[in-house]
Image (cartoon, rainbow, N blue to C red; front, top):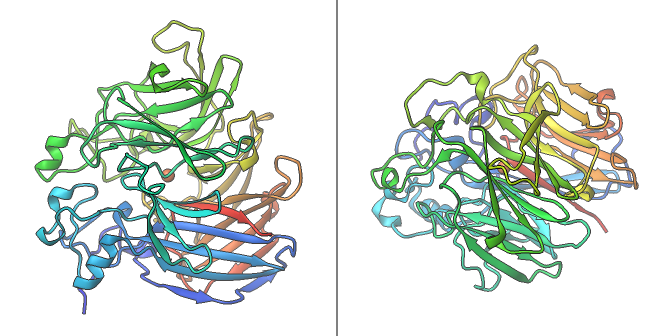
Length: 479
Ligand SMILES: [Fe+2]
């Protein structure tokens, strides 16, 4: 018998832990799943195995759960499994939670001192024939792509020196390389960052360490054909605070943001750091460069929007300041200014998160972005890590500024979707996402023609269970 989960927003309503591992063969489908839509959609998210022994916890600290939709000749099958991390195995054996606060090993039970704290709960990535699940405070975990069985820590046969790897690597669609970075490379409470490259065959061919302007959360980065972009925002870590049992992260609005830009042909010693206004960003939409003009398209808010990341000065936040908007930041690499000739431009009037693009456009000029958005004129339901579920899917046309939208019912929120290429056109393909049916305590998989999202889904695959909000997803084409 385990104790009840607490009543907090991370554990109630649509965020109630599911703890379900299952196989569902041939989901019920309304409409027709396109028969040429073949492949697998992997999703990663947190799903706590046991209630937190400290009494409450934050959404992002849950054990990693991976799920897979298998699309095959018009049929869709579903599978979901826990990632069996060292932490998951220790707590399963003890039948209770043993780990304390998010990214603070000084709050753990003595019996797990020194053991791995990785949860593998953030993002799946498919590259060089491997399925890895990533969480930015740990090394990747390898997972069997067919059974979803956990294969263990992945360190390129021990070659990796960093103890952490980002959950947001980028695959260059032309070179086939996987570009990655790490922060807090020596583990929680440390300061170095590094830049990594896995070549198209799966070999780790570069690991270069460097020091950021300050130690802040670096959740995502961008690549272009000629540059790598590291945005640093003042959601800051203090090792002394950690040792005293405090929170890993605090927002420090007294600090500027910084953007480090490195030529891909160079090394981390060539990074130029540009000082830009205080702001917060988690997810990159894309990056590209026109000669020496470098563009970073990113979801940007005025300050950190996570309700459980406190302000270092203790000041109350305006929730509106935490809403991220799609924004283009541009820099001129020939500028000698401290901000690199920085300019900022809004890309759409709606806030949201979890942006995605056609994967064939990563690092290149592009036209379309898909974002799980929040329409403030409609009902907003509690779901996911910020407790503010997206109530609209938006497709932005960056050429015309038009935003094509799809709303669900007043009882529906959305998660992170995926774009699946079909033909050569940038939006010639399908867009898929999960609809959270709050009134039915279950979920649907929606399949759209990406060119006509506002017309509604071509097909809806019904799940008899609720899929707790995942963080990130990846599509692996079938053969
Ligand atoms: Fe993320």
